[in-house]
Amino acid sequence: MTTLAGKQGLILGVANKRSISWAIAKAASDAGARLALTYPSERLEENVRALAAALPDPLLLPCDVTRDQEIAQLFRTLGGEFGGLDFVLHGAAFAQKQDLDNPFSQTSREGFRIALDVSCYSLIAMARESAPLMAARGGGSILTLTYLGSERVFPNYNVMGVAKAALEASVRYLAGELGAQNIRVNAISAGPIKTLAAMGISGFSSILQVYRDRAPLRRNIDAAEVGDVGVFLLGPQSRAITGEVVMVDAGFHVTGM
Ligand code: NAD
Ligand code: 0WE
Image 1 (spheres, rainbow, N blue to C red):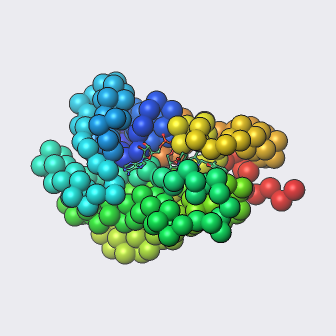
Image 2 (image 1 turned 60 degrees about the vertical axis):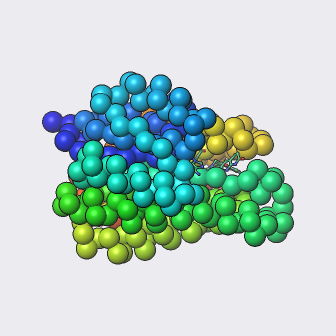
C-alpha cells in the first residue's frame, strides 16, 4: 500500500521536466495518486502533455490563474471527472522581469499587482474552489511552494519576496478557516533549484554557490527531495500538520554566520 493510493490530486505549475511541481507530480504518482495537471497557455500545453504521457491515466486541463473563468471551469471539469479531490499542489509564481532587476523601491503599482495576483491570490482562489470537492471526500491537503526571500532580503528577489510573505500569511489564514472541514494548508520553502523560473534570475549560479558554502549539509537540494516532502505533506502521514511552512533547504536558514 503506497501513501497516496486511491487519492486524486490537482497539480499546478508544471512548465517542463525541471519544474518543482513536476518532481512532486512524479513522486505523488509513484505513491499511487491519480493526477490532473494544468497548463497556463497553448505555448506550454505541448510540454505538459509530453510529460503527462509518463503518468497513468492523467487529466490535462487549461488554467491561467489570472483568469477567474478558467479557474471556475477547471473545477467544474474536475468535479465531473474526479467527483472529488484529495489534494492540490499550487506551484505558480510570476513577477515581471523588470521588477526583479530594478531596485525594489522602483516597483510599479502594476508590477506589484501582477506578482501578488499570480503568486499569492491564485492560492486563495484555488483553495476556495477546491474546498467543496475536498469536503466531499472528508478533507484534503493543499500545498504551495515558497522561498526564504519572504522573510530575508535577497538581492533581486524584490517584489517576489513580498508576494511570498503574503502567500505564507495566506497559508495560515486558509489553514485557520478550512481546518474545520479537515482541509490542511501548508507550504514548502525550498532552497534554490535550477528551474525555468530560476534561469530567468541573473547570477543564479552564485546563489547556488552561497547555499552550498553555508548550508549545514554543505550542498544544494534537488527537486526530487522536494517531491518526497511534497508526498508527505499531501498525504495522511502529515494529517496533524497545517498552517506550516516546512523548510527544505539543507538547513541554510539556520545559519547565522
Ligand atoms: P517553473 O518555471 O518550472 O514553475 C513556475 C510555474 O508557474 C510555471 O509552470 C509557470 O507556467 C507557472 N505560472 C506562471 N504564471 C502562471 C499563470 N498566470 N497561470 C498559471 N501558471 C503560471 O519554476 P519552479 O522553480 O519550479 O517554480 C515553482 C514554484 O517554486 C514557484 O512558486 C517558485 O517561487 C517556487 N520556488 C522555486 C525555487 C527555485 O529555486 N527554483 C525555490 C523556492 C521556491
Ligand atoms: O520564486 C522564485 C523565482 C520566481 C520567478 C522567476 C522569474 C524569472 C523570469 C518569478 N518571476 C519571474 N519572472 C521572469 O520574467 N525563486 C524562489 C527562484 C529564485 O529567484 C531568486 C532567488 C531564487 C532562489 C532571485 C534572487 C535570489 C534568489
